[in-house]
Figure 1: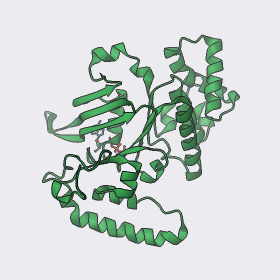
Figure 2: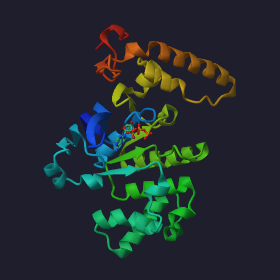
Figure 3: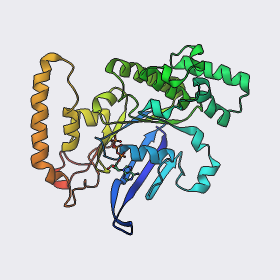
Figure 4: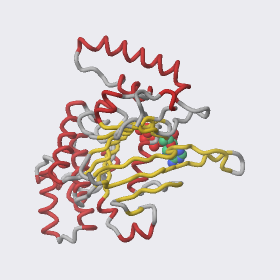
Length: 318
Ligand SMILES: Nc1ncnc2c1ncn2[C@@H]1O[C@H](COP(=O)(O)OP(=O)(O)OP(=O)(O)O)[C@@H](O)[C@H]1O
């Protein structure tokens, strides 16, 4: 196991301004002391509902969002130090795929120009080599070579997302941050895009940070996961820890929200979801501190950490 990226106690606090003088009167604690690490070549899931702060963490990792405090280490080097950033190929090694493929692909550029742009910046290829490489990248995501002369609006949502993946893969990155990459797609198309991502990971050894609100989508994608709520992590663990031994009520609530595909189980699942929701409303005070923030994470096994007070931890502890 080798650690590729480590997020250490990262905080991103957005100022809220109000009044005649536009003074800062409060802060949104979008990320409030987040720590986790991603292994080379593996997929890490970051899961939480809307507003939990997961996109903020994704953007902080790729450098699109300045952090208030904390550190982001890439292969052991602190990327929050501008001097270090200049010395490594961080912008080449870490790429991002966005949820909204329509607005993340320039509508005035052809697919060739969209995919060739990072190649021009990082590969040193000349025009002939560029065309060959773009053709190869389109082939990887199952699109015919002639599509390189088309514009983004001429594609379906799933195809556009595949173009976004080809662009991200162009620089041969070590990590791709995928922020809700399939949320805007129909179920059948979701599976297809996820399969392309899996195959690329296997063939190129790329690590993914897979950001999603839906535990069901990441179930077959990730080896390890972090569950985020209101700017803090409430549970971290392996796939088995989270899907079979969840301890935080918020994680259990997200698990209950996974849609049941089997018709006979739907009614049972609906009843379970209602019961968990009721339990969440009744008991949530016990799972958060007096300010409504999650407790610090405590290790309950070598792979599993939960944000619970000691009195509530199951088992012997670690
Ligand atoms: N630039 C900003 N200024 C002020 N508040 C912000 C800014 N960006 C995000 N926020 C707030 O920070 C919190 C976390 O936002 P973030 O987008 O990271 O959540 P998210 O979990 O990714 O949700 P979603 O899936 O809806 O994007 C939210 O309350 C959001 O309103």
